[in-house]
Amino acid sequence: MALAAAGLLLFLLPLAGLIARAPWNQVGTELVATETATALGLSLFCSLTATAVALVLGIPLALVLSRTTGTLRGVLRALTTLPMVLPPVVGGVALLLAFGRSGLIGSPLHQLFGLQIPFTTTAAVIAETFVAMPFLVIAVEGGLRSLDSRYEESARALGANSWKVFARVTLPLLRPAIFSGAVLCWARALGEFGATITFAGNLPGRTQTIPLAVYVALETRPDGAIVLSLILLAVSLAILIGLRDRWLGAP
Amino acid sequence: MSLHAVIEVERGGFSLDIDLTVEAGETVAVLGPNGAGKTTLLRALAGLVPIAGRVELDGDVLDDSAVGRHVPTEERRVGIVFQDHVLFPHMTVLENVAFGLKRDRSRVARGWLDRSGLGDKAGVMPGELSGGQAQRVALLRTLVTEPRLLLLDEPLAALDVSVRAEVRRELSRQLAGFTGIRILVTHDPLEAIALADRLVVLEQGKVVQTGLPSEVTARPRSRFVADLAGVNLLRGTGKDDHIELDGGEVLAAPESGEGDVFAVIHPRAVALYLARPEGTPRNVWRARAEDLDLRGERVRVRLSGPVPLVAEVTPSAVRDLRLDAGAEVWVAVKATEISVYPA
Image (cartoon, rainbow over all chains, first blue to last red; front, side, top):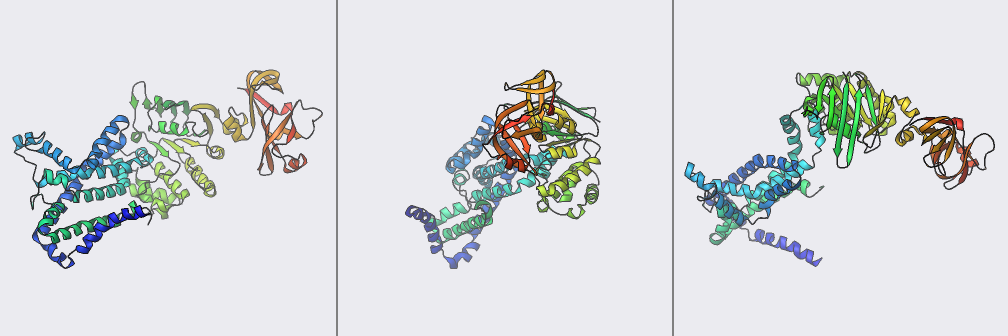
């Protein structure tokens, strides 16, 4: 009982600290401050783009995952879930080594097209996608596995080809799983720090998203850091409340 | 239009091995216990499971493993209706019925719904339908595509007993207006007899009996069918005027023929006595009543003993014989009440 209370306190105290120290009268001015607005805009752009990319790439990946069995499935699953357990900094280093100017892909990209990915907004999006996409893939794959295959079989027996079955039956039935997967993915992308700072750097206006801005502001303008943290906290709470039926069981 | 199917499916220790021919306009009921392979047979005919063998429908070869031919489900024009309707939950009833249509979808679907008395449900989501209505919509959804072969997988099993009769009547009416071949899978004999022209009894992946419902129940060839028909089924070797049962007992029965035979004894022909009966019956032995089961006006008594049988007696006989689980009784079966036919 005491241990449970201690555990709960560990969650509650930092939140209480954040809220108690919040400079409520400055929230308005902080929000419109240039640096804050820039970081916020960049964060929204990067995290939403990362979620969109994750949807486009992640749904097909989940489809493939749900239809493979045996060893291959294990390997694919391990690969897709690796970024979830990998320390984000390591992910950032790995991305740097792959897409960096002398990297595996980065070197030919730079030589052939003069493209340079690291330390750009693109890099921030890639870093966030890398870290956040597994959340979407896992959610969608779970949805696919619990989908009654007879819906798709009925559709086929009614003369629907694979594309029609996917578009009119599979995808709509997966909507709840896709939605909650996308929200989780977006939340993870919004909070991404380690991989982004390693691979994309910390350039205001280009790669400095809210988490990076919080980290920097904590030393120079603590009040700004707190306000930015509050924004992220509000987003997290909104997600929790929005998805409570799905996560916390019956209301 | 006819169906010829030779199907072999091997899956994790279970094997299905079937040779089935169904003529145009015929309704065949595939009857069998759980795990007999009934659903696998339907799925194979629909092209949903890979098979070894050959399926020919209406002159079209749908499957022929010898030449590697497999027509995908969506090109077979084979309709399948599952046990619990499987209506698309995100579409209205009208959209569900229109799903398989190619042209003039909405108008045609509405016409079918109106003719079935479901017109007022067109805009409703499947979740708001009763079980019976949902199953009727599921049947319509398949019928509008004019399949050449209609496969029904236990279409009434998921329904409440109270609505089953109504949906069965509707099903019977719809099937009568359908010109293709119908195959109905069921474990409910009533459903089979009410809807089918012919029964195919499947056990452990093999056809054990086929014929008109009356033929199949009159001469069961398996324990499953005998139980359905409510009769005792024994097997043994015919020796002209008696049968040597597989258990070693001898049963007197005239015209038993020679060789492997089945013997059917109706439970009403099994007479029970407190004392050893005198007179004509030649099949007499002592047995123990294992349990009693009231069925309507009669009581079915399961007997153990040299020949395990079920007897059917009146409630007053139960009182007179002081019958109860564990009671010892004398059993007599008249030789002329035993019907014997070759196995």
